[in-house]
Length: 117
Image (cartoon, rainbow, N blue to C red):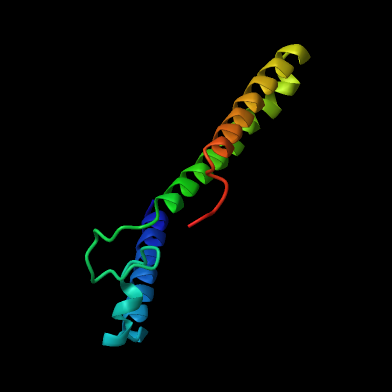
C-alpha cells in the first residue's frame, strides 16, 4: 500500500515538473497571438462574424457529412452478412444502397453536384 502511494506521488511529481519545465521553456510573444486565435474557414476572427458566405459551400459540406456518416452505417451490414440469412442481408443492403442512390439522384437533380458561381 505504501509502495503504491509512493508511486502515485512520484508520478504526480514527475508530471508537475515536466509541465513546469515546458512553461519555462516555451517562447510566447505578441506575434504568436495570431497562431492562438481560431481559424474559421479563412475569415478574419477580429472582424464581424456576420459576413455572408457561399450557401453552395455549406450544402456541399452537408452532403459530405451525410455520405461520410453512411460509411459508419455500412459496417453493421458487413457484420450482418455472417449472422443472418443471406436473403435478409441482401434485402437490407439493397434498401440501404437504394436510399443512398436516391439521395445522390436528388442532389444531381437539384444541381448540387455542379459547382457554378
